[in-house]
Amino acid sequence: MPEFLIPPRKIPRSGDDTPAATLLRYVWRMSGWHQVTICLLAVLTAGLTAVPLELQRRIVDRVIGNEDLNLLWLFAGLYLAVLLMQGLTKYVLRMYQGWLSESAIRYNRAHLSRIYECRQAGAEPKGNGEAGEAVSVIGQEVDKLGGFVGEGLSQPCTNLAMLLAVGGYMIAVEPLVALVSLVFILPQIVLVPLFQRRINRLIATRVRMMRALGDSLTALPETEGSLEDSDLPGQLDGIYDNRLHSFLLKFGLKAANNLLSALAPLSVLLIGGFMVIQGQTTIGVVVAFISGFDRLSAPLRELVAYYRVAAQANVQHRMIARWM
Image: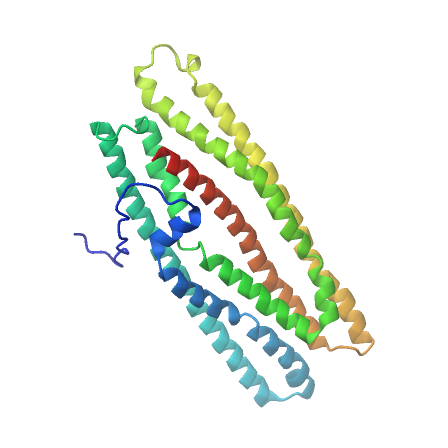
């Protein structure tokens, strides 16, 4: 038995070789109650996000306005302590997620290798057992699917908690500025599912193409005639076209989201600046809100990325389940 830096999780076998019925059941089978612990850690990490915003507001309004040096050092010390605590919890969270994911990948590769070995030996009549397809499934596809285990539940918990913590803080401090600015965030939530459904279909098609390409490459030494007479050129062209279609949708979605995210701080400057001039709010609120929307954009991007990764993992899970 090798000496691991961190031993992998011992995943109990289910008793048969049938795949999990859904992606969520697969995640639970690979990680179990560790998901509860990691989600609690994720919520703790996210809960610390709103604290620096309040400290920023107080530093600008109370400390700088009153020229209180002692209070400045106190708030600066608290700010540093919160940042260090948040950095430490985030580091532990990432390591925990990585450990669960890599444990799942290791288990899945060993499990699918046993299934493939049985097929080759003739003990399992199900499936075609082609070498190129097996290499694609056990190599690339399992890596993508298993990598989702660590983030399966904790990632949305983290980012949703961050959005609620920061958004709730901003609404509590200055509802009008917060609500008008949040209007630029809502369209992003609508755009993502619309784009992702089309991307999912392209992903499923590409997985089938990659498996077929693996079979063609495996059979190439036995093929008579030139490379141009084989299926490879057409397969490569199909994969290229598929990838370009995916880029068109993915980067278009990213550009739209970036524009909307950039408009939110601008609305804070316009509306918040007007309210400061009218004496209806303070400069500290505007500073904290600009920083707040920067903190909102990060979890929003992460949620968009998570939605995409989850959709891809779901496609991958279905296709690996069919191969099994």
